[in-house]
Length: 413
Length: 142
Image (tube, rainbow over all chains, first blue to last red; front, side):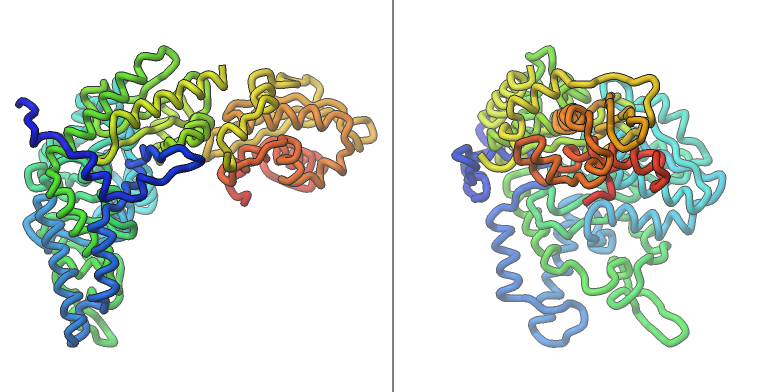
């Protein structure tokens, strides 16, 4: 497919929606390359938040007054909008949570505690984020189940032969990250879902690094559960999404109890509200949910195909530029086959030192273990520096990153 | 320039990082203690020789791995500790360490800076039977 005029982003126009990008630190203009941690928030989303509090704020689902009705409708519609964004069948399949981590914990507690026991196995990957890794590890300890990890090969890909060995009829859950937040690897989640289903296991896909960057269709993928966070995709913090196939969510018991999630309550017993409200106990994330729907509009207006191409092209450019230096070790797959991020180490310089020097150039990156400590242990490095890109980033910013890395090298030589 | 950044990497820090003093082992050390900063993966292992009356630090050596701040701090501390009264080591605090480094330390990096000091202090406390831990971590230190 050739790249026509409409296939590329109008970065200049997009940047105008993000006034924070104009910030300067000691005369250096910010190059924000920490998007895998959190993305910046465009004006229409900020405006939606302000408008909600100025115009519509009320609690939902309980008031009979006009304001509560408006807030309720906006909140419920936000579920529909998010469902549409990821290809879910409807609001019944979309639960609003606090973040990806809470979405994972919801399934781990509501499904895992009830269904797992000795002899059962949960299969993850060595590149799993702590959000999934720690959660299933601890639920396994509680239930007597076993966790196993699909090997990551030298190029940063999953060893699919190993996956086929590990997933057996003892497997109850295959929980895999869609795009690695450390390696940038895009995993074959659809194949892994098929593999899980071949053995009557369920498949949970952690989409925290995929939904913000590429078109995602959970139906096509055939994931049973899917999770992501609003703040990595132009939305606010405090909102995450748990997608679940309706029949599975229907069969599950809730794990948070309280108001909003009930249907009938007596002193002796309670029954549950319909989906998705059954899993949204207490006053929910009303404003954040509405703002997330606005973020979906914002990204769809740009076009997720374009968002994807832009991010990949910047990652490839950064990969190529950093690859010019022998003393830079880049983690993960080749430049032309990765999500919108590049993690690297400069010689023996600790990533925290690199990041501090980059900060002098107002280049904002993440340095550390990126919530994948076991993966870093396996790779034999305590930490890595990660540059991650989004719709408003430019090649000039990548060039600036490389200049700052050069300066770090000089300082530590 | 604000807190952190190149300011934090003045010549002295880089010099100690690149050419650490008292790097190595002491065979007949009075005690040896290790510590780590799990967030960063910084590690320090320190050998200390006390005087016969156990009131003065005679020799210090260390091994370690990690960021420039943690390793330079260990190197500078190893020089500072030679001949220091044990009592003075016990009363050292983070401000003393930051003074010793001679640079502003950004809040996120204080743990790196104080790791060696904590290792020396905890090692001393363990030796005198006042503390019972296997390893020092800066995790719970605020």
